Image (tube, rainbow, N blue to C red; front, side, top):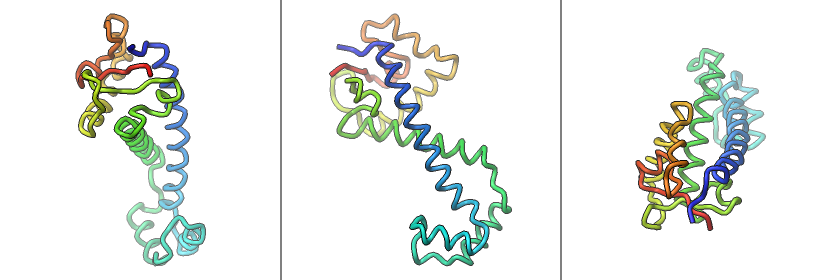
Length: 166
């Protein structure tokens, strides 16, 4: 049985919330490291366990201050972290044991190839990239779900995948 639009939309909402929380955490953590401009800042991060104990505080503070000019662009940094977290999240979970993101898993779905086999890493990567295309033009790539017997979005058709109910 194929998963319909509303079930997938609800799972997407759960996943967006989880990716947002993970992105905020990693932006905060990596941003703390990126904004460490003095040896004392680096020492605090080492004491907290965020940097290896073998880190040279003077050298790292110098490299960060020189390389970032002391003020990294937080908007671009946060955008990059969010995209990286989203890509890792969506790709990793689809090739993992669940064959679904946490949202899909919790709502009783999984993503499979059209013949029912599990996704491979290249297929999962392609599906993630193509889902961006599906969403790019006002989400019109998801409109195909309404007209497809298999409830497939554009990225599902292109990557030969389907979302099924458990």
